[in-house]
Image (tube, rainbow, N blue to C red):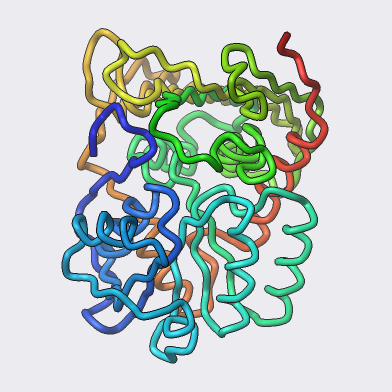
Length: 358
């Protein structure tokens, strides 16, 4: 992965196989976003066998197979859906098409793993909830800014260990590089990408629910704007929101497409976590003007100050946990309730947002 290219963010972690070759079969389709490469890496590292890949666009298919030459092409989506061996279908379709594809996959008797955001409207979310209830299959979403960042995984472990007491407040920053000339047409059409809070805001809200242990929250206030891209008026290049969880923990976050070209990575993502007995800061992708490495975690407690750089030390347990959940019918990786609630809240924040740009 090129450090400056957020579109194709595809981290590689430690091999941590939870199944033997051929024990868990996956198919890949809908190669519209480069995040499919990161999803593929995580599945392979956890031991999944990817039987084949399908996309109607030969160029997208060729690019994918250049990265994963051992994965053969299927002849059609129907071949994937009708194959009884396939247990999970991974996809990164255009955002407003993700839920419809997922519903097809679920009705074919398979679990579905989609890039975020899994939905662009609340109506889509409600329909997929019905399909999940009907089929008993699970609709997984790739919230990569927590699941595929070792610093974020490590922070969750510190919280679970009680290092900072009860989490009472989180502040999140999710800046991204626009790379406007490289983006596909759908990226600039709001009906297709869903809006900035529904899209990259979904990462932020999922983290808030996870780190605070909330099963529900309220959106208090949200804003969106287009400050610097008049040639693409439907693009929102800025968004922010404030939430409060049912346990009283609060959340403030902002997301934007204003990463300067001089930054050596695609975005200076940071999360600040305040607990009753300590604080955590995660510098996910870079320690600006100091180190170009990511995964920096700063912990402060009554014992003192600690700085951990955890690349290659923590791994990405989500993928193996997801595979075992599908095999065993458990919910250790992430509950369906959590996924749907994170999506519901980002869609509400989007729908209720005040437009603030000129």
